[in-house]
Length: 620
Ligand code: AHR
Image (cartoon, protein in one colour):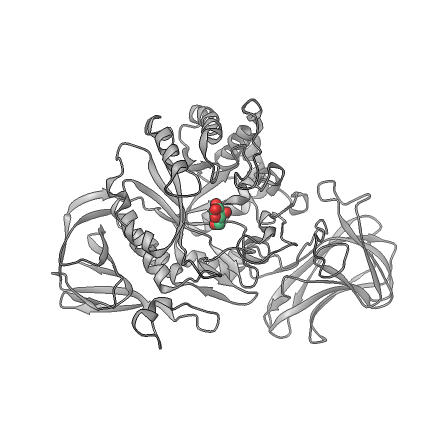
């Protein structure tokens, strides 16, 4: 096939931040995931629900040895998180933490244990990490202070183990109250205190995202308004961040998680900081005064929306205001005097119909007046077609281009939908609002969990060629969801899987990476003779052609490019699968690179696209 890209025919400027990520605390993405804290329910404020695996008064903790563990809240350390534990133990007894699946410790690495305690106990308190009955690391403290006081110690692991059990014991027997028991690796991402798990954050860094949408998703809505996400509860000293239960406790379409809570140790300040560390734009989503429309009909009356709108104004000030402003000062207290440079703000997640339209308008009126520099994103509901979607677009269409900078479209759809919609945006109205493909992923139906197969990744890549070719309409796009802890997963597919010690990147991850690392400055005219069956987009960066091509068919396709040679990065499956079975290839913890990109140089102006592959070609 003869394929020609005319780099002098500049078509559309591409948003350099176009391809981003979507972070939601689902599948244990935050606590037990990206957030570096290794202990579960460190503040003793969460309680077992219907299922109580430890038959314990507090979630994730149980007594060990001869010990009585009880939950209390009278004269607490603070009123925001009043829960604490009382340990009454005989010599050597104490409490043990589930730590999700136990702690992963690396030989020679350091970990910081800290806790608050009080009591009349004068004996020794020891924190230890135990594996197969042997201590891997430990630290001891003398007695308990009379009033709440924080103490900490650094431990070093004497070997590498998976699944170490954290215990806090009273060596000499007695009684103490404890709160905020925390264990952090010293080696967090960028060495930050209260930081992130280094390997997971590194996987994000290597993705080179253009922006990050956070913190949800349905979690923003809450399954009712009482459970909605309140960003102000998530900043400041960690012991004063008011936790909440996680609405994904119900298991979504996966694992029921009755003790899934949000500590908010990873809160809005950390999200902004992460965006800065990743070099991407922050894109927060705020509750618009509505609970999840699938699960409740709770709405805040229009006349009572002020608190919600004020939250939005305060967030803008928290992110962008000078350190002398009230909320800018709070940011500075967190450790960041410089503004974060917030540009985008989404009002509501998946909301629809008049109830949403009226509330969006109320936010828009105030924010557009006070902060015309902020680009607002509005919702078009939970799916990218149908009555609710059409209603949203016709409402927006009547409002003029900048009433919403972009409309958030979500699609979780089968492969054939994505292939068929690769040209969806070719005919969108260029004078209407732009599009933010805020959540999308290919769902292979009939499977549970839904696989992150090569087929899913190719379908996503095909759709993304359509985003890129229509870069004037689609300004932002993010795959969803981002993280899943194996065995703790309420939703599949996801971009990155992990357990306590390992990370597994999916074929979809590599597709995202190949797009976000190869964003052209502008799209260019592409002509192709006989290129049926291929999904293509072409652009130019620094004078070099960047061509993206999905070969969704079973035969190799030879392209004559009319250049001398260049570089190719190609994603397809390796190994024992043949024919259409290749499409079912997935990566696993045991076989992490069954589907992974391979780079090579090509010469002579010809390149052959492998069957069932996605390829990025770069040439002069
Ligand atoms: O990505 C998982 C969920 O899917 C999100 O929370 C929600 O916005 C969508 O329905």
